[in-house]
Length: 555
Ligand code: ATP
Ligand code: MG
Image 1: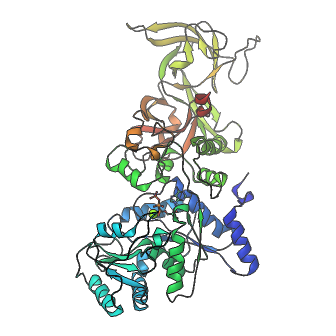
Image 2: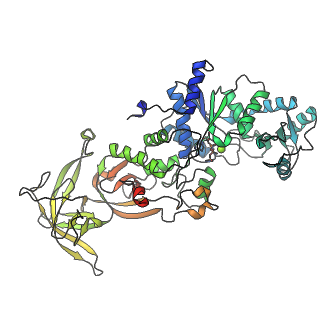
Image 3: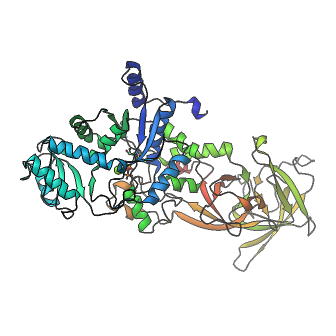
């Protein structure tokens, strides 16, 4: 099924359908508003597919807007990575990239408007006092002693804040709403705070920065957003969103709708925590193939379409959920089963000598790139007297269930001939070093003439042509299904999440493109690593195994 055929339906799309039918809106404008304080993760992909997907399906527009109000935690590196990830996922934002910081002048004007209406004041409580005054879920807050300053005094103090005449933490601008509201966000929320920090977009122009709640609704309104879609933790903030827009002079009032965040088992979906993994060097970087980031999944070999398909399948609701890793893996496995070219790689090699072939035998076999897709073409696979097979594909003795190579028995070499194991050579520790075989020259692409049945098929690589390769086999980064809930999530890290082994690949993989996955027959899906692989030193990441191993573990 192609994505185009399966237009998703969900409660947000129902609301849009109604708004279009009633004439409330004639067009749809959404936005994806990341804070550039980390790389995007698979949770963000859900929000991206939702916002950009709606714009696509309704012939509307979707903006990319950086919610960049906290210069201390933000960085241009994150801005660049986020733009790249959104494009890689296959989406296009309307017009130029936008930044909340584009609106700092207007935001400042609106703050002045609120002060002038007696709806905002400069407070000088310390952060600790402010916390104390705020009250709790069960107890109302109390008014700050500075709450009733005159409008003139507030205007003058806010100007002083803007001019850098207060130290950080010594003053802030607060909305004057209701310290006893049952919604804590409505207890005189902070609108502006002082930060003497250079901003990646505005440099040192400002030393006061607007808070998220104040900035977000105004940015949405200035951009003419019709449906402002966010995650459920902002449900209470909707009151403040509406309060700000209701109390300033702005012609547009977008509506906010909330959906539940994606949580993925055995993974972390918080940029703050992902950042900790990076800074503590517990992973190689934001794009470590074990990370649930878009860049990590890409480096691991995930395709953009598999991630979009995953987001389509999980759907959009208001229910809390913890999606199983198998759901994500199934999407990439299905995609690669259909689309990945096949190749042969031996991950745990042992040498096989085919004694009835001449020393210098070299034969080029023409092999299809995909068993059921002739349009994907063919590749040349060399065959010679010495080959490698996987150690697990040979036994000196075995029962009938074992359909691979056994001493005295036959097996088919994938895409090549039938061989029979005659004897083995071992080292001093008793490990097999070489398996000596004979081959049947009449079995290329056909069964033995005398009716002998050869059931097993194993993969192999010609030894003189084989390219040495490093294989990185990944497991989950965490040992527990919900590491985010652990008191110390770092203690739930799986120390064996990366297993590096060395073997060989067929020569056609010399120029394997990074991030482009192959099916290594009988081994799994692999792609060359974008950071470490080079023609001199091939490194392959295992994207995903051939079969769902979660089911096997559970039973
Ligand atoms: P994090 O907790 O990972 O830092 P965030 O919400 O602070 O996430 P933002 O950069 O503010 O990250 O997120 C941009 C958009 O992506 C927001 O609209 C947010 O609601 C959405 N988003 C973030 N995480 C998820 C998730 N796990 N599932 C769905 N949407 C998400
Ligand atoms: Mg955020």
